Length: 554
Image 1 (tube, one colour):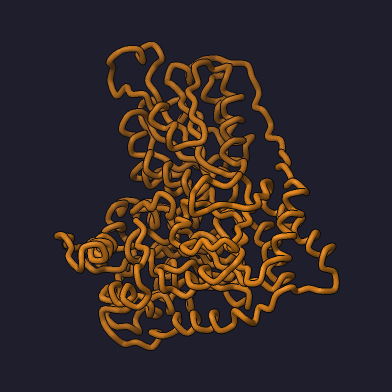
Image 2: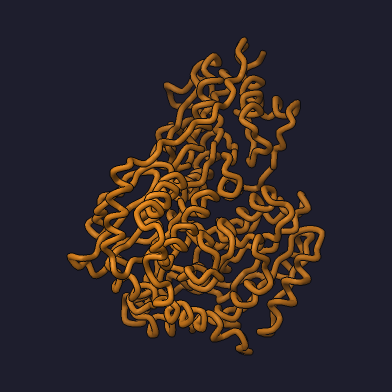
């Protein structure tokens, strides 16, 4: 059979249901082969958007999201989305076109070394130089992308290789068991817990895996320890659980940062340092403060993250082992600690979340918008946050009952992620409400793929917070330069008219109580909807003054 046909059969063997992408001349054979496949090709309007769709799809399904681009500018457009997925541990396989191998040694049309460019932003990148290698390369790409910690792999298929005749069959996927934790490390962790007085748990991106979250909740209840999640660890412990201490603080005076200052033991579960630098929460390295690192990989070397015990292996299994060891060691004495000592902290933060819920101001305060959004969205519904000042508010104020229901571009921190990502999220979970929140700057970076959502008749809702400037950059500059900032203002389209031009429903909120009404109407539509909300970002500096040294991450 033709090599491109075999390639598609290999994708089918991997369970691929859809591919997000923009075709080109050099992957024409691949596109024609897909016509005879059950795999759906989701035609996008920009390669970066296609990568973001695959990113969100991979995060939510646990199976590699697949995106496709042609050579040259197709690959360069794809790169930002791939880097985002790789840094946020989303399984993604990217398929890129390439010119004939007969012209790659010389100056030729759109020729560039795409594999060399993709290597720093992926776990593995490989060109197929012979059609006989297709089955191995595709199998390896999916295996590496999906194994812990997940990330991006890249397959390049040159146009002449795609036309070759081959006589191979796909290699079937084989389930691989992840390595278990060392029993001596588990025992050392139990010893350290036994010696602690005021422990606290830090739940990161790895803790939102379903089985890991279940074991983490079991550990928190068994020991009586409060859990603080990173921005990406939301829902690892449900927001209404007494053991949930919500999200990592934004400033040195924020409540959770003070709780970390006071702790003598931090049990870190599935935490990536790229999520939130340890220097921001481990600011008081007293001699009696210890760190237990539990994750799929050994701890990163960082002077602010000196792990005393490292439990390395499958996170869910490691937590299960720890739970069993705690049972054996402290039978009849559990819980070891009193979660009641965290009750005041939890209530103080909860009151803070509710403080502006009845505010009637216009522009609308971020706290008010997020209160109404949280009230409207169900526990299983999915919110995607873009990057901007709104991300900081979502990170702190939007809490979750269920893991993987708040997707944030965090490690690479990429503007333009949320709206196209919501398309991938909706295709992965068609029965859930899917809402993206973007700033007016980030939203316009991938606005073209509203047409994709309209064409697919997907009822995603895009909410845009409007302030007419790069609000997060302004906040950062104001913090660093005594209130001064550079020129960051721009003008916006009429968002309601913009939506209409795409053939979709849209509105601009004109009162503080209009957010809920707009959401209700938006989710009644047969296709996508757009809600523009004027936001009061005067609250940014007020938060800085209240919490002190807000960690505005960009």
